[in-house]
Every structure is written in C-alpha cells, then in structure tokens.
Image (cartoon, rainbow, N blue to C red; front, side, top):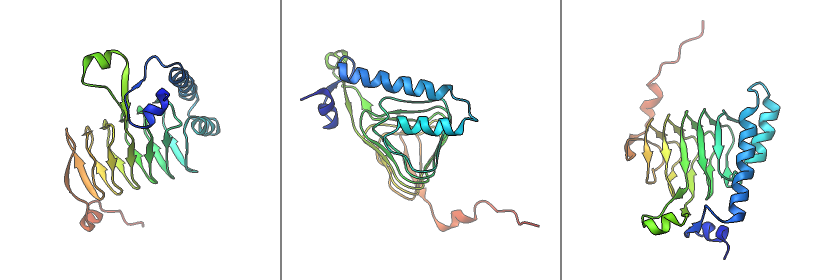
Length: 198
C-alpha cells in the first residue's frame, strides 16, 4: 500500500519523507506562490491560477491572497465561494465547501494531525481526516477547523473559534472549543434594519 493510499484510508502515513507526496507538496506550493504574486487587478490570471490549484470550483469565486494549501486537488469549492486574506487549507484529505460560503481573514482548515506517541510523530507520520462545510456558511475571522469536522448548512461560526467537533446546521456557534450558542431563527431577519431608498 502506498503512502497516498494509507492517507486516503485515514491511516497513519509518511507525510515528510515519501517522494511522491513530497513532489506533490512542492508542486502545489509553487502554484500557490505564483498565485500570491499576481496583481489583484489581474482577475483573469487569478481565476486561471485558482482553477489550476483546486480540484473543483464553481463558476464564481474569490480567494484573496495570501492563500496556501498543501495539495489543492483535495479541495472543492461550490458556487459563490469567498475566502478573505490569509486562508490556509491543509488538504491531506478532502476539504469540501458548499455554495455561498464566506470565510473571513486568517482562517485555517486543517485535515492533518499527528500521533500523540512521540516515536511515531518523530518518524514523520500523520493522519488526515476530511472536512466538510455545507451551503450558506459564514466563518468569522481567525477560525481554525480541525480534522474530521463537518459544519452544517446555514450556520455561522464566530470569530476566533477552534472547531474541533462537528457543528449542526442552522446555528450560531463559537468558542474554544466551538460550541452551539443558539439556533438561527426568523427573528434574525429583523436584527439589521435595511435603509429605505428615497
């Protein structure tokens, strides 16, 4: 069994010394580096660059730079995806975002983890568990999402949260560790008054 096959099954794999994985990491880092050097006004070039990095995209998306990921091909974004500055996605396993996902600055999505046992860890072994984010999710600034987490559709994750367990749909959740604070209800439609046009 190859190291990539072990990784795909959620087993410990050699993340630091396997030649195939190392080559893929370097290839993606080069792509991300080039993307991060493009002018913000070069919208066509930026669009092409992101499509070259990611495994699947919608028609409309924005990913502000700097942006970094490990492999790229394990990342799928839906329609109308927006990631603000400083997004990092460690995509040893699949990372899937639904439609209308908004990610504030300096957020991280980390499928990778390391063994607690020091000998295994020092051998360069890792595991990778997938992350799934549903539709219509807003993730506040400075959020970190850990391996194996699913965030349900129509949910808001408060700034600074450490999401180390799955969060259901239709809630506001925040904290370290991230916990459900309350459901999102129809009364939330009245929270912000929309000015009348004159």
